[in-house]
Length: 125
Image (cartoon, rainbow, N blue to C red; front, side, top):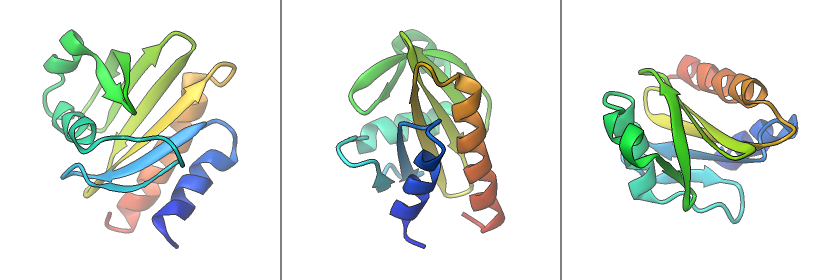
C-alpha cells in the first residue's frame, strides 16, 4: 500500500478532512492534495513530543495555519483554531497529522489518527 492510500484511509470516515504523514526528519511522505505541511513545521512537531514549551508560546503551525496548542504527551499533540483543529500522533519513524472541522469532534479525529498510528507502530513504522 502506498502512503497516499493511508491518507485516503484516514479521510474515508469523514472525521479527518485533511491528513499528512511525515518522517521524523521532516520529510513529507504523503498528504491530502493541496495541503502543504512544510519540513520545518513537521520537525517542530517532532521536537514538541519531547519538549512542548515552544508550542505553548508560539502555537502549532501546520499547513501554514497557526493553531493554539491545547495539550500534548510524548505520543500525541492537539491544537485548535476556531471550529477546526489538528491531532498529531507519533510512531517510531513518522508523525501522522489529522485536520478536522466542525461538526467533527476532536475525539472523532483523534480516534482515526491514533488508530492508524497504532497500526503503523505494529508494522514497525
